[in-house]
Image 1 (cartoon, rainbow, N blue to C red):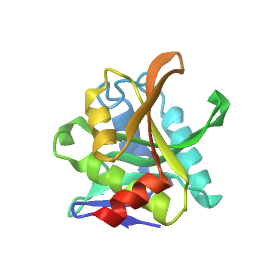
Image 2 (image 1 turned 45 degrees about the vertical axis):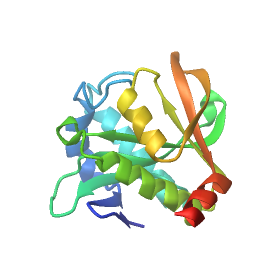
Image 3 (image 1 turned 90 degrees about the vertical axis):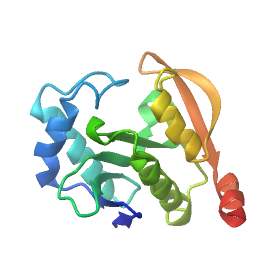
Image 4 (image 1 turned 90 degrees about the horizontal axis):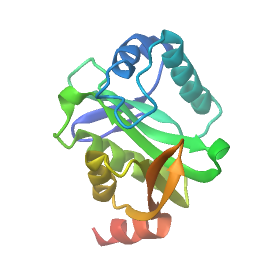
Length: 176
């Protein structure tokens, strides 16, 4: 399934997306507030294979983010799972090419993904896991209607858990 917004196309990842994603994953700004840049191509291949596997299994997954009228992936936005870290909720996660920062694009993508999750997947709740110092990502979560629920340690780092329930989404969706 593909999602479209006013300015973006969000499509499922394909194997041929490895090269452009390898370049993004090697960018320190793209990978800021993560475990570090991907220094080996096999790390990008593993990411792409994982999200394609989720798609094939019929579960919510990540989307490649492409601006209308461009033939370039500028990031990703979609769903992540972290049961190995004791987190049962589905995360809306996103990263954007720094050349496209401060245009509201990832907020637009995150809203489309949130709506897709509640509308098409009937999710009961979504979260975003964000480092407290990552102010731009925090703003995206807030503009996406999420609120800080608690602070946890995730992958060894302090992490804010932003959350939104289906009921909160329905109330905002019905009101606006």
